[in-house]
Length: 151
Ligand SMILES: CC(C)(COP(=O)(O)OP(=O)(O)OC[C@H]1O[C@@H](n2cnc3c(N)ncnc32)[C@H](O)[C@@H]1OP(=O)(O)O)[C@@H](O)C(=O)NCCC(=O)NCCS
Image (cartoon, rainbow, N blue to C red; front, side, top):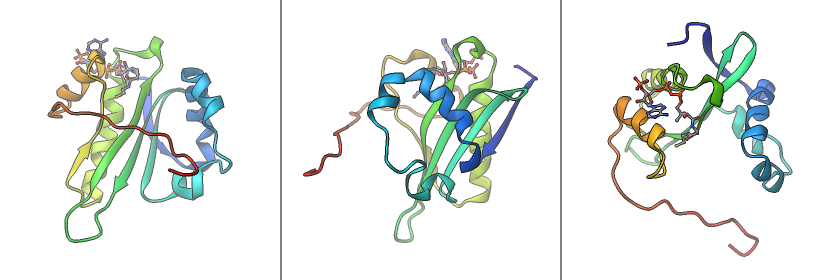
């Protein structure tokens, strides 16, 4: 465990901290999939979306994004872990675990039923991490289709 790491939720104003990591991590994606509306529709700044950053001093070294997905009826909604990343030179120090633990604290504040996520079947590190943090992983398909004008 790295004791010099601190984890905190950041707001829209500070999201540049995480954006720098994303740019480095996926430069092609970053150039191809840019939106006109940075911080899309204010969602990033809403009470339904959370960005936690892990910092060593003031240097960002990892992040997690979580979106709350409600149901329109009496069923409880879910918390979706959309993105989790730790810089390669800071891995295996417990940072991802710490980021997830911060996320879990959200459940105390919101009455949501469970966390959900998608992970590639060949991502051994992430699979081990999620199992360690109590996720049951089951088989299935992950669907994706680009959003186009005619959808
Ligand atoms: C997956 C990832 C977030 C783990 O971050 P990390 O800070 O290194 O993870 P931690 O140090 O908190 O490790 C916690 C547990 O995860 C598992 N784990 C992490 N890295 C692992 C590796 N290289 N091999 C096997 N298990 C691993 C272990 O169970 C570990 O517990 P242990 O140290 O007691 O064995 C990081 O490797 C990463 O950013 N990968 C690329 C992005 C990615 O795959 N994100 C997940 C998308 S679904």
